[in-house]
Image (cartoon, rainbow, N blue to C red; front, side, top):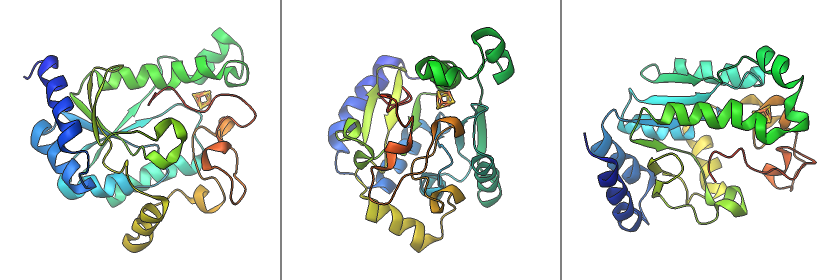
Length: 231
Ligand code: SF4
């Protein structure tokens, strides 16, 4: 197995060489270098990334952070993904504690008082634990998602989690993204058409009015804007 230092060097070289790569090129590069040793993250808002990735590798691993706080529609979308892409293996990463156990230790509805700690326990820790089993991960982060994501590279070294991170659709505009969903009939969480444009856990996701920043519906009314997964 290649040492971490070698993967870091590989990622740093690819950050330059694949700076203008298409999604298909970035995904082919991922399969070529990592084989089965990577995982594709999805929040089950849509299956764009999964659709693109399965064209290169139909039997890939898909990471879903099963926080225990998802909308029923999001769980339904996850299950529909399994039906539409039968080759994928969905890895449901869960927190060490159930919601009931967390309530017992920290008090009910920790997300109201300390969303950073809740996200840490239910997203960041399970993510790290799952990623520690792989050498690379693939995400659907796009530069237009938020100002904090404006410089997202196609390939980079993920210092925080210690593996290679590939963002194949980082450069995609909203038009390109929505056009792909429309033209290819891609599975989409039904909450999107109901006005939820950035979907996370149910208690921390609100509808967004037309013309508003899609991510303004996440932790609405609080200063928090990111889960701590991509920072
Ligand atoms: Fe908790 Fe909300 Fe973070 Fe989900 S998004 S883990 S409910 S704080």
